[in-house]
Length: 303
Ligand SMILES: [Zn+2]
Image 1 (cartoon, rainbow, N blue to C red):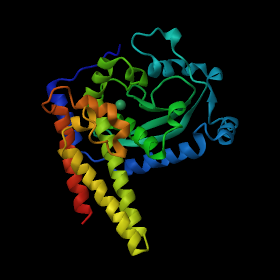
Image 2 (cartoon, rainbow, N blue to C red; image 1 turned 45 degrees about the vertical axis):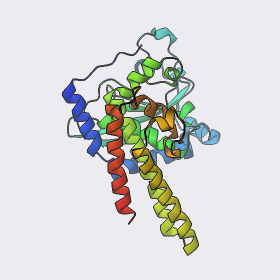
Image 3 (cartoon, rainbow, N blue to C red; image 1 turned 30 degrees about the horizontal axis):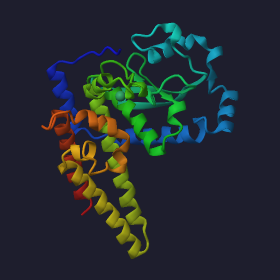
Image 4 (cartoon, rainbow, N blue to C red; image 1 turned 180 degrees about the vertical axis):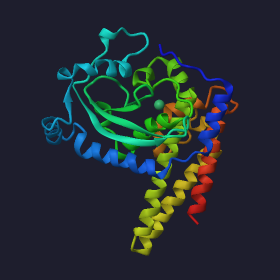
């Protein structure tokens, strides 16, 4: 099982406060979008020809010819209860795929984070950040099937780990924990660093959807089209308002409501933070508070 470094209460409240007021800096979003584009257009293994070319150029390396990277990958891929012999090594990897510069809230300094692309069936995670190496690994095998928006969101999630004030241990969540190991997934989502990163990811997804809708309204030439798009935007805001007001059980237990499309990837997270009892859990309250702030911000921009 995973071992976590639990934080003290002060650290926990600091990170929640931080999460509430922090917006992802536009500069970081630009970098994340650029990496996503680079990944989709050249490095994703769905582009067979491009990947072959990158191997020829020495930008993507074969693991078998670069075994000194073994401890690096072991650090990412080893579960705490696993012995090293059973850890799968990647087939290929691109050590210099890209980088991100983040403002580290722990040190107050700019930090450069190396981003690596990793190929092969080695984990169920989309991506992971390591505080030891200051690197992010993108796992092509799982990432390549996601939409561009979700790929952005997964990279942003790991970038959030890189600048969080309290970093704790690296991200070792795998989809494996989704089936059966309930306690494990619960611990995962409730860890402050994960709670914070997921919240950041959700805000990002909502913001992206909002920007997409407002841009399309501005670009529309026909009045009728503008009206249809405006209706869509109103509906989008309405849905967010319902989310803020509704009892979470209407989505999960009663199934009277379906989660907005931009939240469907976060169902497990939301179900975990809503808690079990009929009283609203503190984590759900914090989530709602963040949604209220976002809703107010977006509606004031929609005037
Ligand atoms: Zn994470």
